[in-house]
Amino acid sequence: GENVEQHPSTLSVQEGDSAVIKCTYSDSASNYFPWYKQELGKRPQLIIDIRSNVGEKKDQRIAVTLNKTAKHFSLHITETQPEDSAVYFCAARLQGAQKLVFGQGTRLTINP
Amino acid sequence: DTAVSQTPKYLVTQMGNDKSIKCEQNLGHDTMYWYKQDSKKFLKIMFSYNNKELIINETVPNRFSPKSPDKAHLNLHINSLELGDSAVYFCASSPLSGQGVTDTQYFGPGTRLTVL
Image (cartoon, rainbow over the protein chains, first blue to last red):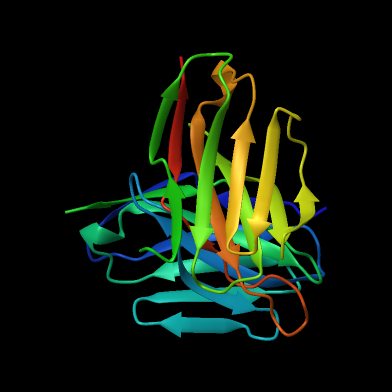
């Protein structure tokens, strides 16, 4: 089955700097890669996703890149703000599958 | 925020008791899920139903029994609760894509279960 590894487990950056979180997946047949943000005590919420026919996708300060050859994808947050502090999860869906496999999560802290 | 709802939000109970958590979605989605999030924040899928039919049953003790009376509702009943069952349980739903596979998942607010 699919396995998703996420790094780092914790990340601390200064406000205004960029943050990068990386994930690798094991099954080359995976074709859908969402990113979720979970604030303290809240539900995971989708912030951006990418499909395997696209290499990069951007939404304001957030971007995701996908390298199918290396089987890894990354979340990039620019001009970080205190409200970006949260736990971020990557996930992968195997082609034809009915479930997402989640990474272990990254706790991002933005220092003012 | 009311698209996927769960009740109760908090549940504190004694070991050995039986309890249920309810989930409802008003998004018209075909697929619903139960996830368990432990103290280390790891999100692990437990069950998935597609239009009332069980399609995913991960390695979960049979003390956990899901029930889907219709495609908008998915409940989770837990028998003989144990200390290790303490966690946050999230319900989620997703539409089916044109290829018949799950797409973006929308999570409920979670139920924090504490077993004493």
